[in-house]
Length: 459
Image 1: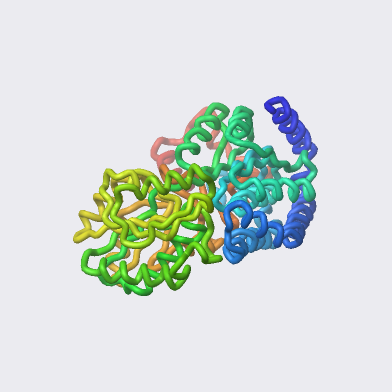
Image 2: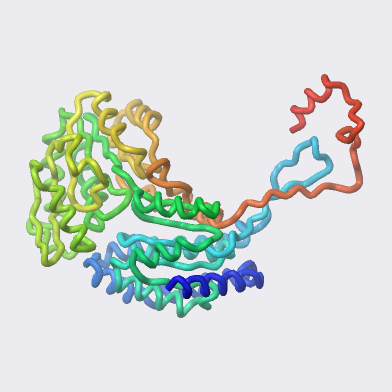
C-alpha cells in the first residue's frame, strides 16, 4: 500500500508540474463535469447513504448533494474573478509601484473525510482544491462503505487519476497517507485524530485545515420562547440522529423555564418522529456498532426525562433527553455525537460560565434569548467557531460566512470564496516602476534621523 501511495503521489506531482491544472478553462470544465456526474448519480447517492446508516432521503438532499451542488455553482460562477490577481493599495515608500496578490495552488493535497456527512465532507474540499488548481488524493471513511465506493467510482469517471483519485480503507490507510509529504492537508474529524494529523503535517511544515468538533452549548435564557426554541433545538440536535459536528451538544436552560422547555422538547420530538420513532422514516441510525455501544454506555446511570429506547440489531437509539448530568459524568466529558441531549439548569451567569469554561472552545454555540444585552454578553465572553442566535445549525448554509473552528475545535475555515482561498497560496508581489529611481534609501546614508522617523507615515 505504501509503495502504491508513493507512486500515485509522484504521478500527481508530475501532472501538477505540467501546468494543466492551473488553466482556468480546464478547471471550469472539470468542475462542470463533476456537477453533471453528481446530478446523474443523485438517486444512487441517496441509496448509498441509506444503505450505510438509513439516512433519510430529504436529509441527504439538503445536507449532502444539494449542498455540494450549490458550492459547485458558486465556484464555477466566480472562478475567474477569484483566481484573478487582486490589486491592493501600494506603499508611498515604494513609489512608483503597483501591488498584487496572486492566487496559486499549493500542489498535491490530501483530503481525509469523516463518516457523518460522507458525501458532502468529501466533495466540498475536493471541488475547492480542484477550483484552486491543485491535484488531490481523497480518503473517505471506511464506516460508510457504500458511499465511499460510490464516491470512488464518481471520481474515477470524472478525473484522470493523476489529477484526483480515491484511496479506500481503514485507519492504516490514513496512517500510510499521512506518512507522505503533501503540499496541503484538509482533515475533518475528531479532535483526537486531528492532533495526529497536525503532528504528521508539522514534520514537513505542511499547511493544514482542521475541521474538528467539541461540546457545543445551547444556552436558553428566561426570555426565550419555549415552544419555538424547542422545535428549533430538536431539529438541529436530531438531524442525522445527532451525528453532526455542530449539533447542540447540551442545553443550559434557566431554571425558571426548564419545565416548560422540557415539555415542549417532548412535544417536538413526538411531532417530528412520532410516538414510536423507530418507525419514523426521518431518523437516521447510528453509524456503527462501536458508536452504538458508546452511546448506550453514556446513558447508563443517568436520569432520563424522555426516550432512552434502543435496538442493537438496527443500531437505533431514540431521541433522548438526559436530566442534569454531573459535570464529571462521562456524557459531559466528550462530544456526544448521537441523539442524546442533556439538560442542565442554571440560575446565574456564573453557573453558565462554570459549564462552558470546563470544555475547550467549541465548533458552535447557540443562544436562545430575546434580550439583546444577554446575546451580546454571551458573544463577547465565549469563543467558538460559529453559531446562531435563536436557532441552530443554519449558519453553515450561508456561503458568505466562514465555517471553521477555533482552538480545539479546528484550524482554518472554508465555504464560498474562503474555500478557494483555503487551497490557494496568497503570493504577494510588487511591480516596481522603472521611470523613477529614488536614491534616498541607498548608502551612503545622508538623510537626518528626524526625517527617517517621519517615513513611517508613508508605509
